[in-house]
Image (tube, rainbow, N blue to C red):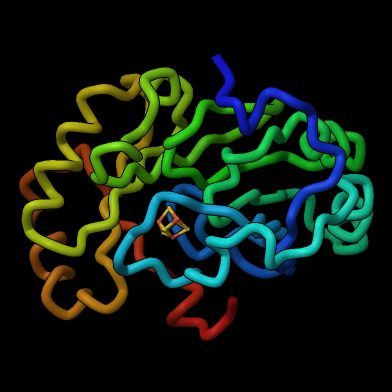
Length: 210
Ligand code: SF4
């Protein structure tokens, strides 16, 4: 069932920024991709590095065809919809417009809202907050589970989520950037003991690109 925010097709969406870069995280790390960052998030992660995205009213609503046409001016045909929490919006129209331009569509989501639109690859990055935990339906739909590790206790949260995803879902642990000096050794040791997991580093930050 769609959340109230998502039930109506949205032909314009609050666009915080869009840029062509290299995907730095997870399964598609290293691939050229057009990032579409939508405004709006009510999840409230303390370590969020895009807090400017939270208030969607601060970002202009742009027609989805315009977003897709701008994306298509670059040679790559991988689009990553991110935020904010992009699933606060109904993404059907945006996905149609991107598919018409020949894009494969990935999404980065906390899973706090149900999926909308025809998405080709779902990266679920669940957050622990009580009222913002992922909705049940998203676990089956996730192609990739990416858990940010900011504290030792997050490893338990990672395992709790891993029990709920599809057996083919890829599993990633990603040290939180600021906590990385302490968390990276922990994550390395953990993955060596639990090889079903892989490490995701924010490679774009090492490359100094967005
Ligand atoms: Fe920031 Fe993403 Fe957390 Fe929202 S879900 S607060 S955008 S890290």
